[in-house]
Amino acid sequence: MGYFRENIEKLAGYEPGFQPSDTEVVKLNTNENPYPPSPMVLDALAAVGPEQLRRYPDPSGTMFRRAAAELNGVDHDCVMCCNGGDEGLSIAFRSFCDRDRPVAYPVPTYSLYRVLAGLQGCRVIEVPFDDEFNLPPRLATAAAALVILCNPNAPSGTFISPAEIASLAAEISGVLLVDEAYVDFAGQNCASLINQFENVIILRSMSKGYALAGLRFGYMMASPKLINGLAKVKDSYNVGAVSLALATAAIRDRSYFEENVEKVRKYRDELTRRLEELKFKVTASRTNFILAESKSPPARHLYETLAERRIYVRYFDEPGLDDKLRISVGTEHQNRALLAALEEIMPR
Image (cartoon, rainbow, N blue to C red; front, side, top):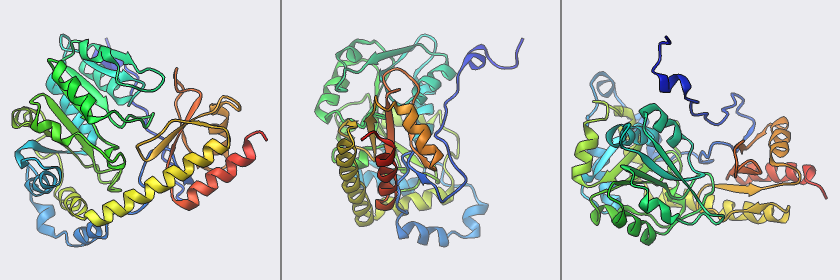
């Protein structure tokens, strides 16, 4: 008999994107923001004192909750801090799913959902997107305790309107979690839905638009009833005092945030146009990455050839994605290096 539970023994764990130790590479594989965080974040870090480190942090993160509530037009009782968006997902699975309470989500999407379902031992209902990544009607009739919709979706970068998502929330009997990890680049979001529906959770990340992937900070928004239940499941002090101070500084600096996001959008659109000129088929993206299809040469060959040149993009060896590359939007210099390499590799 093994040491682990049977479902853990059989589980294929989540595989994060490759993190090269060499900082001189062109790293476009994990959707990090290519620009630094707000100077206000660095000021907040410099102001951290020994007393903040000696004591336990505020267990509810009141300072950040109030800032996030003001930004999103909700009450601070509707906000809960988490240690990155991934912890928020883990809390949701542990709160709503078990052997008799399944999860449903459209595919292809963020592969961690499948892993968290395996850890929880719950049944998974995967509903395929169509070729244009429209909201699958069958999602509303899946009879799941938890429905997850990544919007904008990863790895496609596609976006479903808040009106369509509101209709889905009204149809289902379980909880709808809208994973908005990439919403900072989309121009629209679903924050207003939590004032309309008791069964909706909005999940946000500070990793993308705010350039704080190394901090590991996210937050969830939902009705006070759901937040109170989710709070029973989270760790007592799930976000540190330093993280709270830095995340609060970041979310308050709106002008820097908007300037940063606009640069990413600009270079995303430029990169899309140039990839299409190189005969890639590119899905219209509302994120900080691009999904680009290449059948000749095969996507895997391009991925491996770029890696030999110390240019890293993401390749998924699974049906529906194995002819595509997911490319994070980099700085102007990084994007040029990628395009120059592809011009040499792609057939004339």
